Image (cartoon, rainbow over all chains, first blue to last red; front, side, top):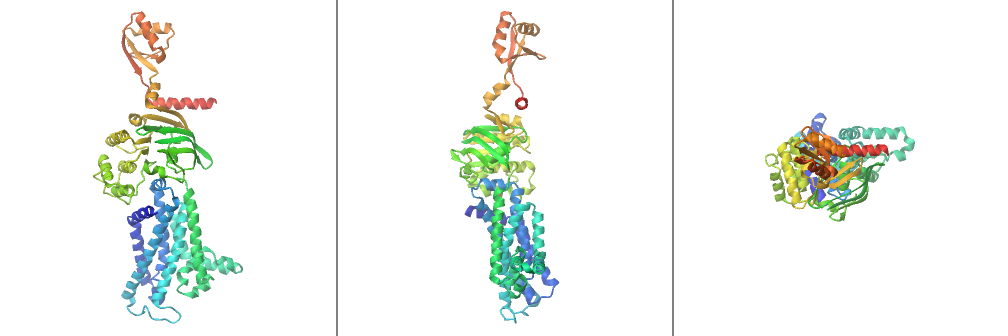
Length: 252
Length: 295
């Protein structure tokens, strides 16, 4: 496993996608900071990082797996290893840790943008009515995003094994990022009698990125904090397992 | 070194490789030949544990299964097209799999890749990529090297260079299993031929025995060809006419010489009439197809 991890880190570190992902995050956060009023909410959301990180991850994750098939390197990878699970887990861990890195960069850049744009107008540790402190709120958003990253990496790996076309996986990622929450809410409103079941739909799990910091989102997700965490991780595990089964049986 | 015993490979429900058995000994260079779609690449992938199969595959007496590739730790391979990460340099691509830096340096130098080995592989030409693919297969002193169409995209100089390297490694005991559609190229290096068609092995012979097939006729040239041919025909020896000589079957050669001697016709030349290797393969395949059709 250590060798597989070292190989995957080596490849990932030499890819431009690593830098492109970081650059995209910084540009999108900067764009969010100037395209709307800077307030408690936008700062605690990491200037949209909560939304951008999953989208970047789905693109980077699927590309990281797809390249092995596109470059025929999957043959080397598979014949030099007996255990396909190690290959899958190593790739999974590398992309997930990249998500954690993006989250850390998002926190730092949020600090920088806040100082540049509003200085000390919102104090990091001060209590605000109806909210935790700004720092706590930002951190809880980021923790939610990291939990959702697990879900999204598993989804991107499963999708790339299923549809095999990177662009299609990215399109699905964008649809999830922008429409997932609205579709889920609409579904729950339309089929309110089935709410007890529908609230567990995978699209609803995107609320984990916001609900940990702002409990009022529970009214939208219809799940409490622990339920949405368990649901997100549970779906992540199901997607990861399905993705692995597809990977194991994919013909080369 | 490599033992393939009664191997069947399935893709979906279709059997692609059918009861294939052959062996590659240390130092041998086995040419895997066959028409497109015969199953050459599938056999190679099966040996590398990449497909579901029945039967037995072992490398150095250690079994290879779909889930146990330990025996493949000393196997190098180039399958279909070079497995290269375009965002890495040639050097980094090699280092990713190598245990020995000196080995990398030697291989790079042997394949004359020094000039571009530190450039990103995405800028490589087809031939450069092919050389890098071969270099990856040669890494870590493998006991068995599997090369699928290794001469693809190589220029004449590189082809000669790769041929030399194959011979050099084989001399040191490395076994090779090579497929190539450039039969004349393969003919120059291989020590054994495995011809497959429609997933079946139809010929499995060492190259010397195989070449015997191509020497089934002899060219004879005498001081009086016309008379010689008349004499032989009247003695029920079948001959075929050439411009400067005539052909006699191998089994009639000694009798033909005796007849000519008795009639005081002197021989100027006796030479084995070698059939072109490619023609020979084609005629074997055609013969097999005819047999299948008749069945």
